[in-house]
Image (cartoon, rainbow, N blue to C red):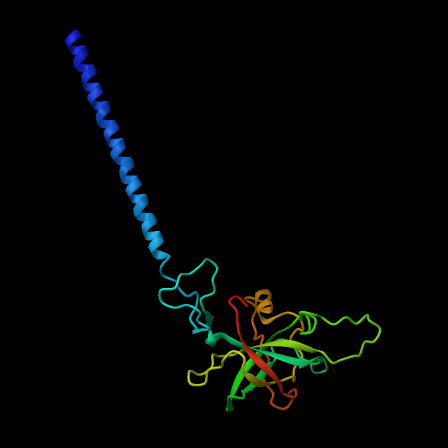
Length: 225
């Protein structure tokens, strides 16, 4: 009986040593896997992936240069998503509505006509959002006709051989033959409100009634707008 008890204790001790060794090896494997995962993560930081397709401009980085967190490296311009910002006079916007069709001519391509749609009207004039907005309570105020930015989106991307660049001057003529669209809500808001409803939110174009064209710069559309 004594011999059997000692053998049992020795067997249990050996078994405990084996379990402890397996646990130690298991922890080493987990530690090695964590080190590999960390190395792969650090390696992925060496590759910068563009969030969208576009043209690189204003590149401020060279090979071998160290990069600091938050440093601007370049500007990425999605030229296939450009939109027009037309600064119309407030006296020209009486009959302008969201959804009206627009004819656009760029000075760089005078013989080509781009088609667009009024996306939205800004909530304030350019002067209201300037660095030093005018103060009209000084007593010597002179009335000046203000300009309100109107966002115009293209109905289709520009042709590959006739791309629009940021900052180009264009002439935009808005068709005001219909007044069904809203003055405040954008096309995106209208689409969300009427999603699934039949009918076309865009009005038909009539070439007879248009506003006088005005010069406006093109700007790159931001994601989600």
